Amino acid sequence: MKSTSTAEHLLTPRMREVLERIRRAKVPAYHTLSPKEARWAYNSAAEILDLPRVPLARVQDLDIPGAGNAPLRARLYAQSHERLPVLLYLHGGGFTIGGIETHDSLCRQLAQRSGAAVVSLAYRLAPEHRFPTAVDDSFAALQWLASQAGELGLDGSRLAVGGDSAGGTLSAVCALMARDAGVELALQLLVTPGTTARQDTPSHTTFARGFLLEAEGIDWFFRHYIDDAQRDDWRFAPLNAADVDGVAPAWVGLAECDPLVDEGVAYADKLRLAGVPVQLELWRGMTHDFIKMGRAIPQALEAQASAAQALKERLFP
Image (tube, rainbow, N blue to C red; front, top):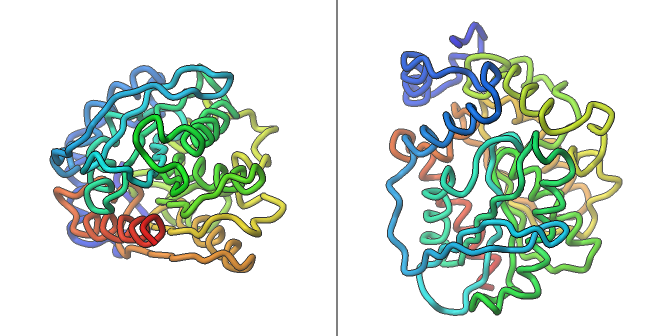
């Protein structure tokens, strides 16, 4: 849908061009599709603007126990066979779409650039598995890596969690759960995370339509994922957490022209007020999901490099 917002001038020329290409392609909006159709559409197009999949010394498919010991697919990426620290990566997609294949290129870039191993998790999706299954799967996998990473030849004592969009939400929640469970984390890597219970910040109005992630799509994702009565739960909206004292240091990467930008800033502020070290990066003129557009958007490369550098600094002290 073409933007009617007066904020369209904020977009960079490259970003505006990408959005125009998407409009010309007449890609159906996810909220007009069934979850099954939306997954197929996202899987087909997810890496079109991503960098080519960089070859790595180690790419391994495996299973990790999720909530209730349910076997979950995962993929390990590493640029060597050494005993590396590890990032658990939780993909975006509104808790409803997305998976290992849609984020393969990004995970390879993070592994290559940081030197750490990356384990990408296929947590169970809504509507087949509604809230809080994705949370429980993600934290079960994080706990397993903390104690059993040695089985993969990795160092679970040097551990981070990260993800984009819904995966950023899950990562923030996992960091809180890790603190409460005594699981040591070196970093939480939050890329354009959702953190609020309702879409009621100014940026949700300013960037409601025409900036890739649209209001109707957000509503569609959340209807499939969670009951309205549950939305104030901090495991959905980490900004509602009673306290964030003592959680892992955070790298927070945001896009200026993103409905989620205000809540990302608010969560970074909440962490800082609690004394948590925070590196907040805001990319001007970018929309949601820009970090996966490395073929077309130079800022995607900057964001990947910044995230990887944060991982390197925290995981290789």
